[in-house]
Image 1 (cartoon, helix red, strand yellow):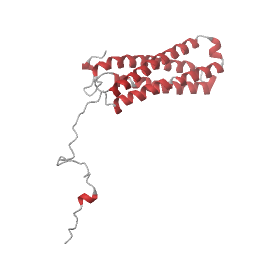
Image 2 (cartoon, one colour):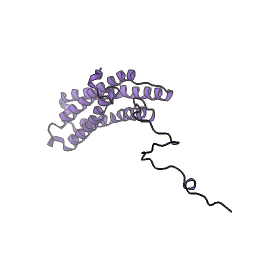
Image 3 (spheres, one colour):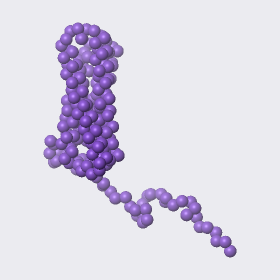
Length: 189
């Protein structure tokens, strides 16, 4: 767990700072793997680079998952919808950690098996398996985004919105009155 004095005052816990690493790394790993597949032997270390990126993805997914389990204690979950979304997010986060870490181990083991390294068809199979790790990452991110942006978990109100009945005199908000309400009506004689 990260001590509070190391965190900026605007963040409730370390999870939002950590969670974006596996998201970025998995896309870079897939791109490097696609490039290594396309270039073949013209990029001699392509498979090693992609494998290293997948290993970094797996490690950062584990750090992100555990920072999320610690984060649960730092934010209030006040609605049943938020609790349900948290449960779904937690499941997909665990699945993402297991799938990316497991895949990284598979890729690493493949580096030491000569027939896997020598056959382009084995690389194609490994590439497709790597693409499959994008789906749990997507589901985790989708539910994590719903936690914050739909359910408001981990978000504190910094500024109160003025009521519509008495806007602040220096308010830059446009007048929301209907045109028919704002124009005076001609009285019939």
